Length: 308
Image (tube, rainbow, N blue to C red; front, side):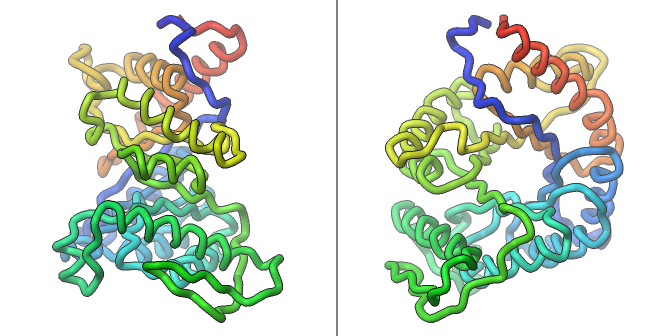
């Protein structure tokens, strides 16, 4: 691939899993978090769909999984904002980050599956309203965490009106706010206000090349807001299966996976790869055979300045 088409924001690489929070068997999701932790991965994430009866509550699951693991970071992928008030969410995340020794991140989305949200007592929002609400929520969350400001919290918005709340606690480490986003308006919000971008490959209608234009929206918004494009880490939820022969993207031997993910990292600036996996063997192989190889290949490319 020609280096003129490459994008690299210079972040260290992160590898993790995207686990289904199934409640049958009751401990399966937690055990998969333990597998990822022991395998040496950096991150384990869980879907957050409170309206799905066969799923655990993700906030509770994160707490239990944090207690069962030692070093891995944990996040929702992504938090269902319409059913989780932002000031309360901020306190919950900060508390869990403190208790876990600084291992919690905040993946968050503007909302989807509105029939389910309404069925659980939440609001139904238009796409525009959901983005407005997310921007207000991010401001509130950051304000709750900002204990250096002695004033009471006061954020008046169209969707959230928080006035008079005390700030804190501050989390143990700078919790990343990672937004799941696809359309231009919310991508611009990512550039202005988020620490990370968390899309899923299966929702890219035109495949991986679509990331180029999506990155552009984020980068331009970041620069307009006085930030650097590298202030926003780029993640990608991926899926695949190991096979003896090459059969397609992430459908082949570990060496193929390593080559393909290296290409994605250097072409689109992706520095976090999160594998959808509820399978112990798949997770362990990803950690042992793919993640180290990608890190080595990317380090070599960065060291020589080549990406061909």
